[in-house]
Image (cartoon, rainbow over all chains, first blue to last red):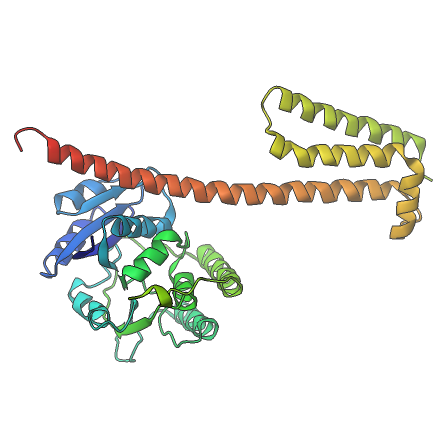
Length: 242
Length: 123
């Protein structure tokens, strides 16, 4: 049975301050949407706050990282039969009011995976620090090259998925810093990718999880993962689509 | 030529390694599948220690003319690298399986909570 509702997957770690607002904001859009907060073993009241705000909460027994958390939500969406899912961060940087824009290419049947990009048409106001801007640009180029399709923002965690994309990523999803690699896997698996221009907020709480050492690890890990992913074979999903 | 004492020490050390590994298997503290590489290490080092002509010949092939026991060290190092690499693959698999279990627990617990709420009397 395919559910016509949308699963909003929100990975959260130590987000008790922001998570309540995030859940309420998504529910207030009026979309037929169920909010699924994946609590990645927070030690604060993230799960309780999310639950009180009306979200379904999946509580991981120990910290598995952002990719593992997102995949938990995707598995939930797959098992519960959701035809569509969106992913938003638990810190409030993604604007729920942009969800209709993000879902539009899915509604029109034009794409399987929609990335909310801050740089899709150059009209966005987001100006990240130089180092990060270079990183985002380089990975976008690399993914575009390896996936043979132009991608502008591979680091965005604001995405919408149809059933084919949900099933693909529920089965296999990179564990840490997953967005870039997942984009390439999607392209190589034959998913149709669309990008829409969206605005994002400065984070409402917490600090960026990316420090200098971590960003070195990020660059090395993601580059290696991309090169390996481009050597792997992925079954094409094109035929399976009705 | 390999000094006799090096051969004797090498043989004793590799015999000890084999015995320790066998004892660990016997006491069920080491699974056979993880012991095989260690046993292979011990046996190869034992053979190279005892079979002195062989060690010299191999050293000759490899161009190690001055000190044949260096080949013994090289072989030991190679096997240790193999064991470590094998462990890295085991660790990666365990990590994946561990995350998979954590995700299943999260999903099952949510389902349990939902069922408990649905079947609570008086609801």
